[in-house]
Length: 385
Image (cartoon, rainbow, N blue to C red):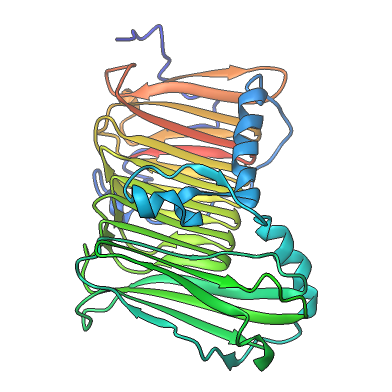
């Protein structure tokens, strides 16, 4: 256990003041009412000796442009080990962000011609793992307009349902889109693809809706799209894992999302989340965008990681949890706040390039729970309430 001389309790700088119950927008313990807050844009030059580690983190985040987790490819994760931790895996033609941005010049209006293919899938109640994804084939001239992916509650349903609403700007595209199905007794993968041989110009939009009849209908859910926001609109619990991802768009949990493993990721967009992870983990990341994460419940052995390459990162954690933390920024400010300042211990490290802060909350400097917050260009904030 570290002594007072090992970790300082006072703020890093005078402008980094610990919050109190008078200026906190909630009462002690009411972390769910803290809500999302706009972060002030406060940037200034500076670099850190942790540049090497941050550069690696930036490269890992940038890989979302070129690679996707195994659950997103639909290869071994769902078929063989549906509840294992996803891993990064190279796939052909995966530079979706560049392809999406380049192809927008072909689209002058929103596609309005509905797809005539099968678009509604009713999932059996025996299924506990569902992956829904859009896979790019990098078709020359085929443009994906901004759509969305949503997870919603529908109490009128008896089992989960997945709906693909696809619209084209030309009927010539009707046969270009198809859905690859892998439907088994306890797991389902639905992957929307496009014919890689199609070389003409055209535009289409994809709206994906996952409807769940109950709060805890599934153990595992993976929802990934290329162009559009991904949103969990209601309170849900997934007993194994929840993954929400997009290439171009925001990722948001509008109400509490509970799971022992939660992954929220975007290449170009913001991440906003309200989660309970218990003894599990939260990984929230954006390459170009802000990340705001509120963790309502976290227990010993939990792990929280919040990253951005270009954007502010903000994390709210329960002050009652003993945890160790590390914050790193390349160009920006670090701010640490606590409703119980006496539980917050940390030291700042500054070098020729930037800064970092390392410390712990509670009485144990070697707590089993860990927090890592990193940004290359932006401000970093952790608030314990």
